[in-house]
Image (cartoon, rainbow, N blue to C red):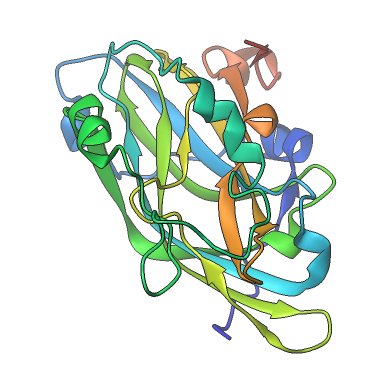
Length: 246
């Protein structure tokens, strides 16, 4: 198991919004904002139940994230919602779209590459770890906060490099990453001037028929919140929060 830094704690969403109002922004991403209005993107992760109850711990490592091409239309593919469940239907045969190491591949990879042309990657200064077992019942983990150029984006996609799981009986779990169909969260959002956009990406392990687990996005659990940061110091408030219910 990978040791987790003790001071990386999970915060309730409301607690984070209240505590972060007066926090100073890091310099990461500032260079790309010169000459154009900017806002703040705070990226958080959380976990819906699914099969997380099988685990004593499930530590995922996130190296960075992609933002969908600015101004592109959101993905309306019906299969997006299907990510909440295991599309293999629990069959022992994992199907032709699984590699030898168990990671799932996407049969429509060429199409996805064309659709993702123009996306932008943001690498973290250091890989961020989060134990999904600790991120239940509304708990979230802040993995990044940076200033970006204003704009509209169709999705956020996490770059998860590993998933290290231990089951409640103490045995090691085999947790596959989604291969060429990665953790892509198809929820359009904006980076607004003088505003903190908090994007909470929700994903969970799903038990497959072959006894392995697969990390899946949970579209219904994605949340986007906007918090105005202007005039907050003048009037002593933390700004108005707006939740995108779309």
